[in-house]
Image (tube, rainbow, N blue to C red; front, side, top):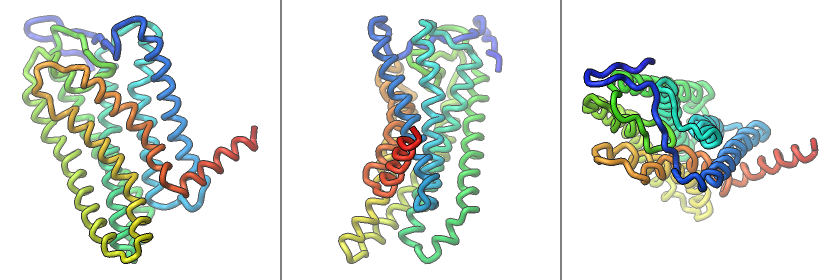
Length: 315
């Protein structure tokens, strides 16, 4: 996509990303920290994928969705962090207009799939705990694949809609983005034309992409909680809740940071708080997910240990 010329100025062809820090002395430390976070995230999520593949006990719908979530986490951090590390090394802070919109598209694509995938995982827990007799038929392999395919299709439509909509705006004035990646709130601030339609579109589509899935997650877990409380055995209740605790933690972090980031578009000035939220969205969440899902799960821990032992035996 090419930038559209504005009526009162020449269209800009690139943006300047200020990054996380402007003090040159801090850049080496930031580079090392985020390189470590990137390698840890990719390694952790690849380990989860390997554990799911090698352990037959993990060949279940819940871990099928978890494997897909690990792929999304790798993609999400790869969309933003390597380019930021490259700019820190080269000391070049400019990003072409087309590259900025490409990053925007893939970020919203992966985040959108994340929304629906978390909903599918909540639906899976609902069926497993509340409808155990029909679980295997209602959550067959075909159903799992359909849920993942629909998630990608809906997220692709959402990402394409926002990317096309942002490409219709005029950027003819300031081109400095006080962030480390391109996203809608920052680009709205730089537009020479009205962003009212784009913001309304973001709220409307956001209700479908985030509001509806979040409502379904709440409803699913309301039924799950009611079913678990009816279990007489304390050990049974503990086991049922433990299978849901990890997922609820990830949902809380994901939706909490997302709502803060996109529901405050009316603020006159974007601050460093937005960078902190961006770090949570693109770095902390993908890095924490493998830890959260393996910390209280003996099956995943055992499978991860097998993967580590396998690597050592081959060394």
